[in-house]
Length: 196
Image (cartoon, rainbow, N blue to C red):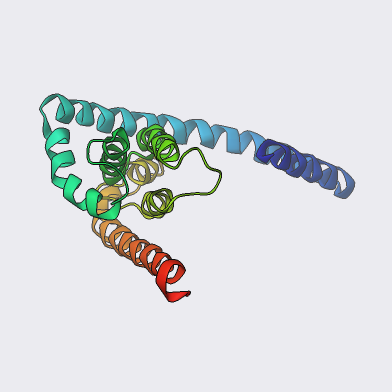
């Protein structure tokens, strides 16, 4: 469906440009955007390769396992319906750690696996369970220690200090995550107790 929407938007834009006689500007924008997309992609690939390499070193050194153990008590409190040794917890913690290091592209497959495992716990029902809603809220707001993707974009565009956003990103993402958890818990409480 999303592909159809994008195709329709592109077609409407081309027809509108043809009617208004601005096809030259459209062509120029297409080629300029394609060049910028390649430049951004190369910049992002370099920083992602760097951080994924560091993550692999951290994994081989046992640091990620220690981080996972550190976050497991918190995750157990946030997801009380998930059994203690269920694979979903491992995927949730791995997703959180990848998001903390700003590796959204690496975190996505882990998040998908976590949601698949949570869906199995939910009996493959079409409606989301409490844990699924909580995970979605946390994944969307995710605390970020190092916004690797944004740093790479700032580097690509010649920022004098691409890493200066680390502190503000951490504060903003922490507040967003705390807010998401409070809102999630409020609506859960409202649905189960307050709404009666």
